[in-house]
Length: 178
Image 1: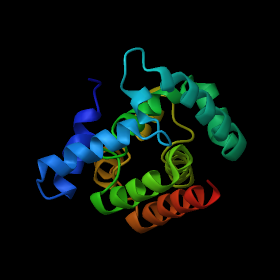
Image 2: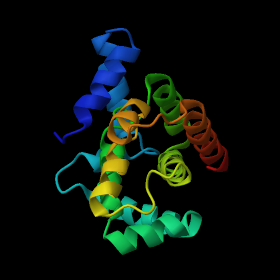
Image 3: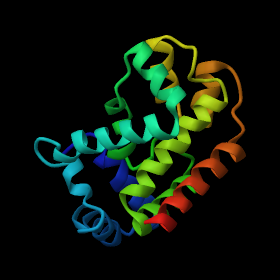
Image 4: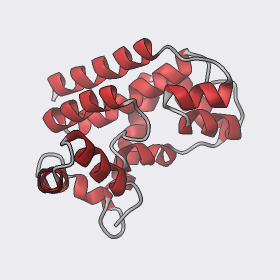
C-alpha cells in the first residue's frame, strides 16, 4: 500500500456508482496493465518513481525551460509532483477533467500522464502562480492545483476552462502521439 492508491480506488468506486467489483477490477487493470505499468508506482521501493522523475525533468527542461530554471533556482525536484501520479490526478483536478485524463491515460499510458503534468505546470506558469515565488510559495502553487484550492491559497480565481482545455488538449495530443 502506498499513500494515494486509496484516492484511485475511491475515484473508481465513485465513477462506477459504487460497484465494488467493477471498481476493484478497474484498479487491478490499472496496476497490472503491461502497457500502463502503474504497479511500479505502488510496489516496494517505488521502482518507477525515479525513472519517471528523470523523464519528467527532461520534459520540463525541453518544453518549459523557464519552469526548469525556476525549479533549479529555488531547489524544487520534480519528485514533488509525484502525488499527481500516485493519485492519478484525483486530488488535483475537478471530477469531469479527471475523467477525461483517466480516459487519455487508459488509452495513451505514460505519455498522457507526463503531458498532463506539463499542461498543469504550463498553466501555473502562464497564470503567474508559480514563477517568481520562493521555494515555499512554489511548493504551495504545486500543491494547490484544484481551482478551489488555488483560490483559497492565492485569493484569486483561476479560470477552470483554460486549465481544463490545456490539460485535456495536452492529454489528447499525448494519446495521439503514443
